[in-house]
Image 1 (cartoon, rainbow, N blue to C red):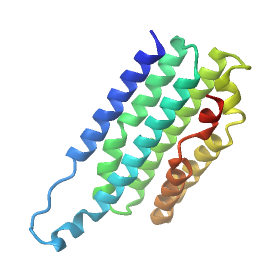
Image 2 (image 1 turned 30 degrees about the vertical axis):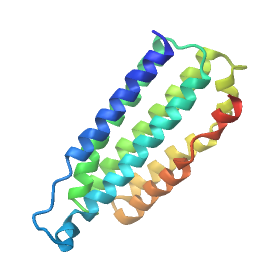
Image 3 (image 1 turned 90 degrees about the vertical axis):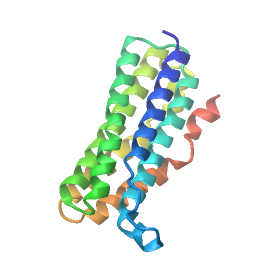
Length: 189
């Protein structure tokens, strides 16, 4: 399998996930602006999840562009990432409906944590397959941003049981940290 086929498949999955998320948003029961108020938490979590999926899509593209080779291990690492990303619509719907309830906020964080760990595994697998002197391995370096994201997700999941609002703030902070495309790969291209 070529890396372009892997990228196309991943692009399709992420596009479907975004479609599923937007279809989960219910229309208001009224015709005035006040009828939108109950949907605000759902819309805010949709925005956050859309941003996360966009971040993964963008950085996935840049990372694969830097890779010269893929392997069976890369394919499975990519499937692991897509599995966790496929749960984002579920987590988004649950946390949007159950505003600031500890278990849904923590579950949403577990999904983000596992997606972050999976992305890290994919990056490390690509670096290993392409070699220590490869463009992708040099671009990843020590991957401080990836490791920091995982630690922040862990902290947020734990925090969700005591102060769910702070956990959500941490999720937003991680998204903001990654919002700009990963320049490590752009500099090496």
